[in-house]
Length: 253
Length: 325
Image (cartoon, rainbow over all chains, first blue to last red; front, side, top):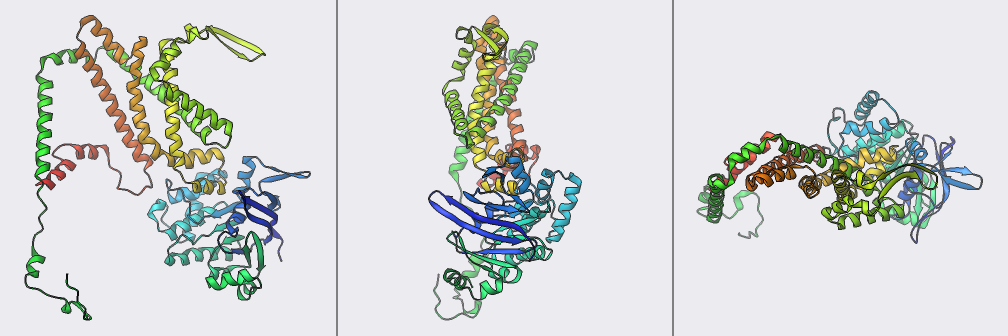
């Protein structure tokens, strides 16, 4: 197996009294697709959000490309990094949200350009890259549209183009098709499969078992803040050993 | 309506009655609304009477109004009113943005200080503040600039520093800051959290997120209230006339104190205030249109179209009247 791009060790997180993550250990090999499955409230999204430091863990660490995310080691302590350093780390980790979160006051082109400008790319180069990406997600010629003029599926494809514009080493998908009308799910999953085939490292939270079966290298099943089952989709999806995983899968399949 | 229970296999099975065809062909006539006619007539008569009396009542002395309207001393006062308004609004809003950000920050000390500032300066009437600032000398006879306990730079007499104008500038700026802080805070809160999360995940820094992502989206909620605020402040600058600063109102007061032509000179000031407010309202329209980008809504309209639409018997009004007939 290729060396792990993402290493998660002993990750804990609670909100108030509620323990959301109770010691997560996970490796994501470079160039692989990992799908996180589990009932709502199992901690999938929180785990994903810890990977780019949108949530701060209470204990444990996430390492991406050999760098601990959000912290630096200082002897026996992990000290939180200054904003600037966290911003630099995030620039190399793309994220796609359930609600798209496109910037409504900016055109499609400007949405895809924004992160590149922050990374120091010249506007002209950023714009031509943006147009290129739009063509790749099947939206050539829509540069001047505003997000609200697009369908949900189109918006999510723009969001994916935006997330990959900075050539991230990893891209996180937080239920990317859950807010879409059923007929638009396919087009978004299609773009995601293209990215997977192109060798992008992806962590995907989704309820689309079909996508997990076809595109995932690794399926991870979470329940109550723990990983209860992990492995290749053939094994985990076909005959899960864990009781909760079996119940969940029979409910969604 | 007839409830046909037998299975239908097309239009043929619908219940047909004699007269249906005439009903389908009939022209639909909207209900007459005589109340609207009567109220519109009453309003028109009232407006006509008012205009007639304003134009024919010799006490308005329109010739005097015309004579003084562009006098240099009036224009000087007008200029002071304009730049004081601009200075107060600009510095007030810069402070207001800072206060709003402090109030929303996770730092409890900053949030409390901002709250305290807003609470205090919203509570004190601008006029009272003005008088307090211009009498600051009796509280602190001298002001000095130094690094506490270390180095001393300069000392000045407060009374020399706080002229009427500076007192007005400081007092009104703090007033604008307190009110605009609340307007801006409301606008910032209206922007979804997902927006800054998306920006963070793209590797945008804090300042970039604020100025390029969050604040522009807060503007549609900020601008209308701010338009009110700026117009209010334009008029509020007239209170500096009590400190004998030479603003628009004070410049007409100086003249009518000599010639006793009180009403026409107040009309001069009134007309200038109306002109300035109109200009500000037009500006507000364009600012609102600018920040409505991406909102969907009808295509943006030019000023001329909007103005013509509001003229009586043209555009909107004519359409409405047509609806009455």
